[in-house]
Amino acid sequence: MKFNLNKTFKVLNKKEGLKGAIKDLFSNDYKYVKAVDGISMNIGVGEIVGYIGPNGAGKSTTIKMMTGVLEPTSGKILINGNIPFKKRIINTQNIGVVFGQRTQLWWALPLIESFKMLKSIYKIDDDTYNNNLKLFNELVDISSLYLKPIRQMSLGQRTLCDILAAFLHDPKVIFLDEPTIGLDVSIKSKIMTLIKELSKRRKLL
Ligand SMILES: Nc1ncnc2c1ncn2[C@@H]1O[C@H](COP(=O)(O)OP(=O)(O)OP(=O)(O)O)[C@@H](O)[C@H]1O
Ligand SMILES: [Mg+2]
Image 1 (cartoon, rainbow, N blue to C red):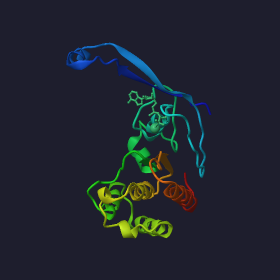
Image 2: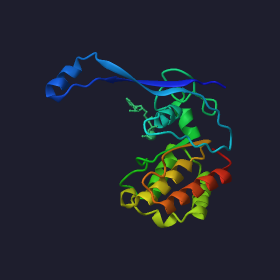
Image 3: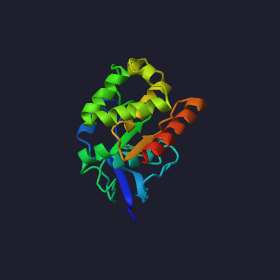
Image 4: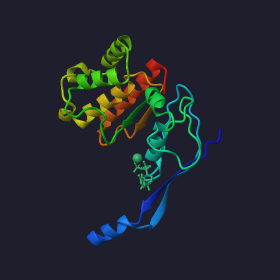
């Protein structure tokens, strides 16, 4: 199917200095940045798809539209049958997201408390929650990190936890935007294996 997805940002041409900043408040001097230009793709159940392109190509912008954070300028997106920015709450239950550049876990909270918060936010029932923690522990030893606050974790540990957190509510689709950014080769491959294994066990993505 042709979805022809586009996103153009309207950005102010900023002027220099304090005077410029004040002038900017009343300025109509805009430029348009085409971030996503006519993308169409179909992804089926069980597929793992990599979305590659140079810096600034529009990958993150596409993911933000697919997760409902941004509204497309034109074109259409259906995620599990829903238009993400119109059905944000339903879409959120259906998806899991990791933006490698920042964590979605609570900085000061121990990992297990973050998991409990997610359990309550996504209304995850006890069985699903316990089964998922069991599965996570079969794949990686995270119980040793349960009591560690996120801010005390290494980048690799935090990323592992972020990925597991994205799978906790049994979402149908997972979006990962540069989940292995800044990580060394061994943990990169560990994370790739973990993602493949989670998707296989849960028959999703
Ligand atoms: N909120 C915004 N306002 C204005 N322009 C934006 C905004 N977000 C992204 N852009 C521009 O849109 C283009 C695509 O950015 P995007 O972040 O989607 O690229 P990317 O493919 O994820 O790049 P990278 O590999 O560096 O993460 C860039 O030119 C960027 O400057
Ligand atoms: Mg990006």
